[in-house]
Amino acid sequence: MTDTLTTRRTHLAAASATVATLVAGLILPARA
Image 1: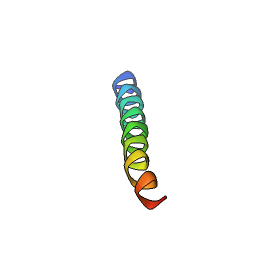
Image 2: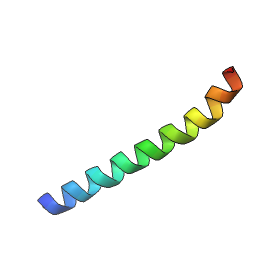
Image 3: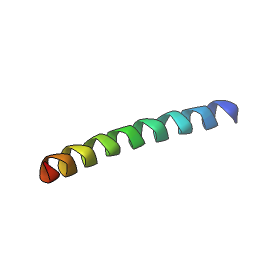
Image 4: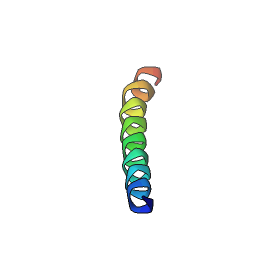
């Protein structure tokens, strides 16, 4: 149970970081 929860949190954090990077890469240049 704990291992599964930790794995999910790790994947979620990685996915969130990836999405944030992609969004920043698309939005920031457009605003500049």
